[in-house]
Length: 261
Ligand SMILES: [Zn+2]
Image (cartoon, rainbow, N blue to C red; front, side, top):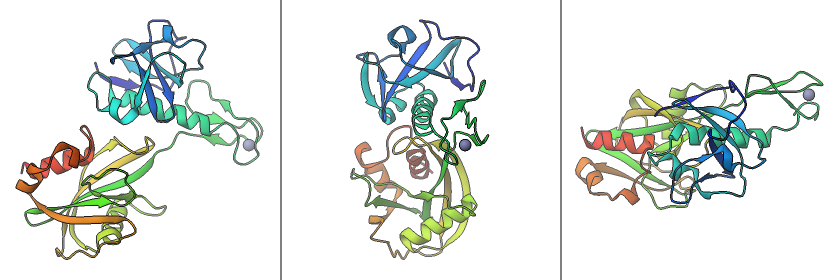
């Protein structure tokens, strides 16, 4: 049953509606898996984030009931809709971080019918925003570049990536990140799809690219990249799942897609 986001509930919450409690980056569910319902929510404050089939989905800060799992693991579970989980974590975190006006410090009010908030004193409007990140599969002939980021806690081969800077296009960001992290110039750059982040921060929108490098000579930035290597298709095929980005992620889709070409 696909998840569809909504910005305003058509009615009040009912006990049978679906309920996603959020505790930091962890998301609540029934012990052993499955959705909680609003009947489990106690007196938690909740906001409607969408629908799964005919059922409304509500999210809010965690109540005591339920088991908790990191959001990225639950988003990769086909029994839970990834979009619902990502949106729940993002909206709850955004509301917690946007309680007061940044201009005049007055407490913000909810905008009826929207997820945004407004300042009753100076009328400043606050919208939920995403941070776009360029994610680049760089190839050199029949090999693809995989990197290990120094700032990642786990030992995983990933793709070159980085945040869009203000004033840039996504293509500019992709070229700049590849140049900064690996020293490579690109001869081609093609859009390859977008997705919410499946690990790291949920307020990221990943924008994927495929690119061809002008040369294979790497000059890595040790502040960002712990290791970088060119992989042939068979070498990628031989890597275990634990050595690659998580199931359901855009990075894994780009890598698997290259390996299958
Ligand atoms: Zn204000």
